[in-house]
Image (cartoon, rainbow, N blue to C red):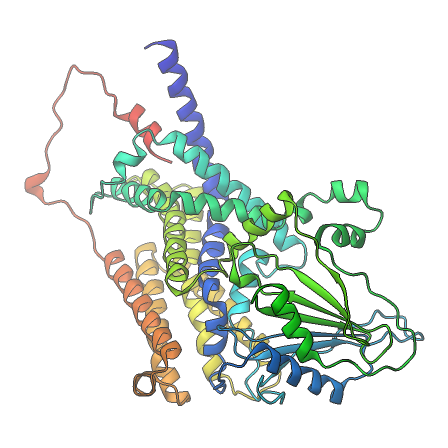
Length: 537
């Protein structure tokens, strides 16, 4: 063997070691991040499904802004700041919250008021069940339900592991693109390797993009030292970078707030028809009042929209965000690529399906690790048993937890106090409870039972929805309710996929006696182990 070939072999073996162990150590968290992150591409739709009482027609941004300001004038005219999130094609309601003025005698910092959802047509508060909706999956996928900032740090560390595993996997698999066209069934370890290769190569650019952009979106948190070295106050950095206006002080002179409708129209004209998304009103009804209107980031790839600030007392334009430089434009595009808010229905479904291939890639990699080390007749070592049980807990039990989150939305009384927290608890109690029960069962039975229960939970969703709301499957078909119809169809498809997995897990593989052959001695050197070292991650 030449020195070059020897060096190449050594590099591939080193990369195989890195790929295997980094992928294993972060695999279970990455599986959960990929699965919940994939669901997040439909987080507004999930939230709408979890509030079936709402039947809202689309409303123009101007009307929604006017009704929201009228509501806040009637309920909290003396607050420090108002925040208004206007409806769009995917979120039909108006969301508002207010920041009260600080109490000079109180020592505790001021807290914003509870968020309220309004009917954009009338400005009246909506009477809908409390829920976190799709926002829960979105937050979990990068915060992992841990206190700030530890969940984000752990998610970032796992993303670094993932990016390293992707790069080392490409180097390790010499025949990765050839093996992409090979998928052998019922071949044990080779089948899992083929499935891992296919799911990895099928969307390799997407996997690399989504992992890298996920890291970039939080780079300021992961690397705060340049900002700390150059800006005594972090707020000054955000003013320079994003054009955010510093909070001005009220003058104490009462001046009526200018009508918001003309300001919204003026901002839209400035953006050549661009849609306003957020309105921030500081010191309302004061001579120092300002109205900042931010552009929606869902209209283009760059997720960071522009902003224009007007005087709330006169309506005159005060400032406008400067055109972003190359660095901020790149950061905005990276954020847009990761969130996918710019995507239309077809591209959004493409994101969703590619996200599922990433989930499958991580899951098959975890299963491949145990398949490679399983030795019939030998007593499994502790590490093997631990990985095997963690695989069941994550791959088979997490989907049941996600289904329980959705089911609890229908089964918990709609008017119960704190029901949003109960929905979240239902997910984790179901997930961890099933994982604990699986420890008491033989491995094969644990796989079958956990996957079957997950399938049953998803299959029950359309039935429970039909029994508890007036927007069941048949009513959705009759009324052309495409949101609820698509949701029920997706739940049935997921149930079928999990049911197929339970059926496959229950198949006992036994080779027929006629096909068993005694290996014949050969004088040729065995090259299979070397090839496996370069092939298997």
